[in-house]
Image (cartoon, chains in turn yellow, brown):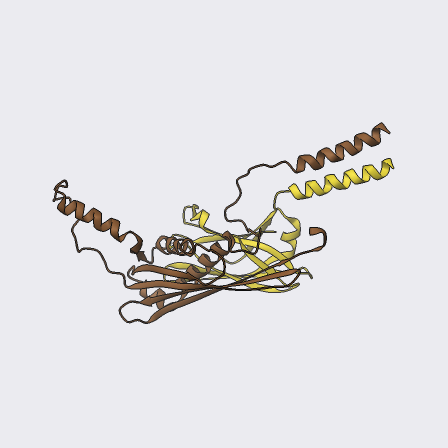
Length: 132
Length: 197
């Protein structure tokens, strides 16, 4: 009986703690030279399953227009949110509160292209952040 | 027996403390999925998609290459069965477009206030005429933004499916030509599951 109660309490505590955990994030960042890709992650699951296959960029007028090809290396569906942060030449984030988290559901072992346009002409660099 | 009781009390205490109400500030940009009704995430997704689409459309890029055209926002008709403040959506789109440095806007909702202020400056005798703003110097809008928000709702005993379609158009006032049109579709599904889990 006592063992059962211990188990019950342990499970209860685990469930509560899981509900209280902060949302983990993975950061997918393009390097300054635009050639290689750097992937930072503090969420091992999402970071291991999600990768950036390719990043393309061009200018439309004077605005930076980027496309990132994301790959879900996991065999199951991956449901996550991503956000693109833009930075100017001095490293200041451009319009930090105007970029929403966007939902993306990727089928197992699939690739998706995400696209975004810089909020204004001062943005020269960007980072892609992902979280579950 | 005492240990058993204390374990039960501890378990209940943890449960009860988990039910206490608290107020927290959250991330305004975070995904919101409380109900299938139109929400903040929908508004943000629509605004971002519309502005991104408009900014990369080649004729718009050409128009805004060397000048900042003046626009005004008419309205987005709410054709859904919900009460939705569509002006809030167009306000966000307008803010993003202004901050992109590509467009300027005239605000038709404050025309009467502006007229009152101009009449006060011109006619009241209270304002130094060397500093008074002159009548008839406003810049006319070249383009108009307007659109529709519609929805299709389907439901059965356990599922509710809502499909939203937001359409925005940019019309050249002089020629009557629609220079650009963008659409954003959103599908939200709510499934009632066993035991609410």
